[in-house]
Length: 147
Image 1 (tube, helix red, strand yellow):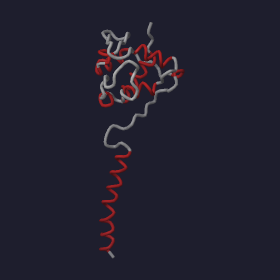
Image 2: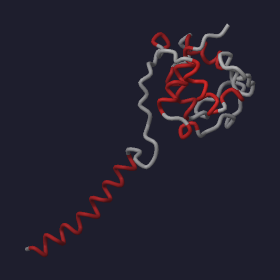
Image 3: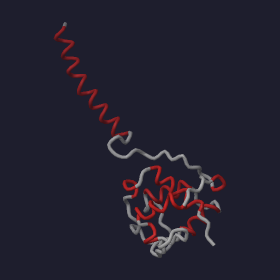
Image 4: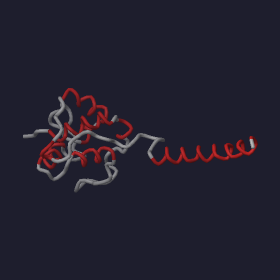
């Protein structure tokens, strides 16, 4: 009897390990987990705007101002990508939402702005920024007031 239980246990261990590996892969355990942003969705319910001082280091870290015009940030005079003012206006008008902004940062080729080519924006922001940093950037863009 003892020998039979050991054999059954010996067969069960690899099966259990295999099941755990599959479960881990299926839930994203081998990389960065899917974002669970706490930001609001509809344009009428925008997340609070962070201070410029909170986002300026992030904008510099990502090089955002090299490609995007961001009037609130000194030196952010890029013209390669869409102006953050134009993006903010679409969010504030309800044409886009914060989920769109987040996806645009994490997967820039998911929806290309009219008149801009694919693969223009870096594809590594999901690794460069934490979820909290992305939330700050999204909240900043969504609330950006331009003249």
